[in-house]
Amino acid sequence: MKENTFDVPAYKFFAMKINDGRPQHMLDDYRFLIDNNYINDIMLIPFENIDGLEVQLVQRLLKTKDLFLFGTMYYKPINFIKNYDEINQPVNFCDMRAVHFDKRYLDKNCQKTVDKLWEEYMEKNYISSDDYTKRMYRCFFERYQDGSYLKTKERIKRLEMRK
Image (cartoon, rainbow, N blue to C red):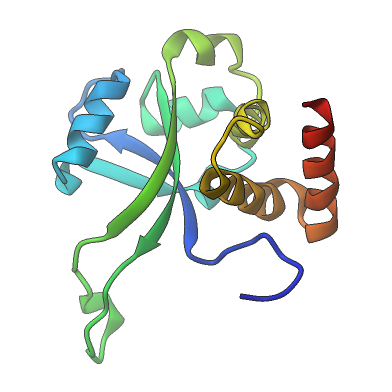
C-alpha cells in the first residue's frame, strides 16, 4: 500500500438494489439475500455511479424508496483467460459494512446528495466503530469526500476531538 493514504484499493463501495420489482425493502430482505448468496437477485451499483447525485434522483434511477449502501473488501477471482469479457465467476465480499436508509429517513433528506448522506452516517458512528470499520470510513472520506490524505487526517482529528 502507498504511504500517506487511507485509500485502500481493496475497499469497494456500492449501492444494492433487490431485483424483484418491489420499490421498498427492509434491512432483513437485504441480509437474507446476502447471507444466502442470492447474487442473481440483487443489482450492485458501484458508488462512483451515484456519487454526487441527490437522494431523490438515485431513488428514481433505481426505482426504489429505500437505499442500501455498503463498503466491503471485494475480490473477483480471475483464471488465466485471454478475454476479460469472459469472466463470469462470482464476486466475493468480505467484512461488509452496510447501512440501510428507509423511506422515512430518505424522504426527510431527499435533497441531500447520497455521498453526503453516507458521510454524515459515517461521521456520526466513527468514534464508536471498530478499527476495521474506521479504516474503511477513512478510505471513503479520502476517496469520495476529501480528495486527500491530509484533509482526511484533519477530519479524523476533528471527530476524535468531539469525543
